Amino acid sequence: MIVVKFGGTSVGDAAAIERATDIVRGRLARQPLVVVSALAGTTNTLLSIAEQAEKGQLIGALRGVEGLRERHLAEASKLLGDREAGADVAADLSAMFDELASLAEALSVLGHLTPRSLDAIASIGERLSSHLVVAVLCARGIPAQLVDAGDVMITDNHFTRAEPQPEMIAEATQRIVRPLLESGATPVVGGFVGATSTGVTTTLGRGGSDYSAALFGAALRAEAIEIWTDVDGMLTADPRVVDGARLIEQIRFDEASELASFGAKVLHPSTIAPAVKIGIPVYIYNSRRPEGCGTRITFDAPRRPVSAIAGKRDVALIRIRTPRMLLAHGFMRRIFEIFDDNRTSVDVVATSEVSVSMTIDDATHLDGLLGALMALGDVSVERNRGIVALVGAGLGDSTATMAQALAALGNVKVHMVSLSSGGINLTLLVDGDQVLEAMRRLHSSFFPVSQ
Image (cartoon, rainbow, N blue to C red; front, side):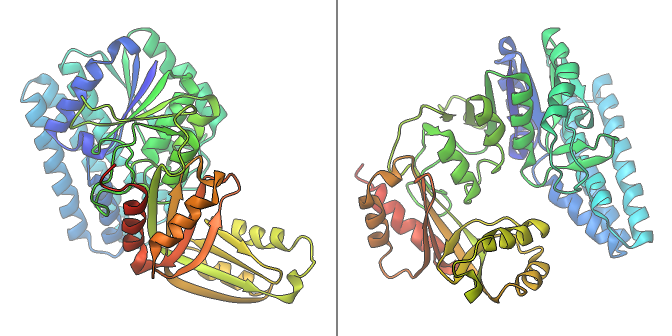
């Protein structure tokens, strides 16, 4: 059994869905569970519809609904024509758009968008795509079976960023999905979407379809998890930033996880965790070039000083300074309890005897966070910072790699340097507008064109 996940660009239109169908057909002997994202751009449009409806801009919201309706029905017509199957799926899709229009009308009256109602709207994209993909697979002779994501992806009730419940997911997957696979059917489920134990719709947050695929893979003890996207695999850097970025054919689990956390766009940061836990290899392939070798993520990939470089902007640096830290125990615990209370994660930490500096990339709860931290000491915030990370399993084996990195940066100002506890990640905090230049300099140094 394997899990095959298609991202939004891999089911973005009729041609992409036809390619996905061919990919699934080539894997039928391996009993694939198919996980699909919403058609490319759909989730953004749904969120815009919700925002307009909340503001009372009902006409604009309903125009968005009709635009999505026309797009999905047009792609369905290209794929299925006017035959019975095409008429049936068009009716199903239209019913969902009618539901979406009703939600928009209700929001415009209430004038208040709750996280729960936002999830109800955001989840519609995956519901649409999974219905369409099932109809196309069946029309092409593949015995597909729709599985309601809410029946198998059980989460808590933190709407818009719900936390999956692995034990409940495993039980539901074994009970609902495994029998379908063993009977020769091809189950199709929407990623990113789940439900509470009482059946209320939730979402896992942006990029959550990858996470869904990994959780289902872990629940099935799958032999592999395949992530189909619009790039050839994991690269030595973001090709939109760095010319000459190269494909990494094999990479270690811990390296891939670090790269995802520090800005690599190919994987959702949480994707790797369920696969790592039981050692399921993860493959990343380009659905537009399915013949490519892609990237294989496993425990036994080569150990390199630097495997790749990642970066991200819009980082905030929080500094806390207080003499009470000196020789005091429990002070760091109190700081991190405040971050936990404000549902904010920390990327990089540096400490001295009387101060601690931390970076965050999600400022949603920054005001509440700062208010609580001020009770501990003097607090300052530096915005518009960025992080550049060198990732490699052998990075910490020699100081030469770190010296080379700092030399390559030249006159790029570095505000903080941190080597991870496992020696796999060297993190450099720079000005936000210097992130791209820093990435280019580092890539040129560690991956010269002559190689």
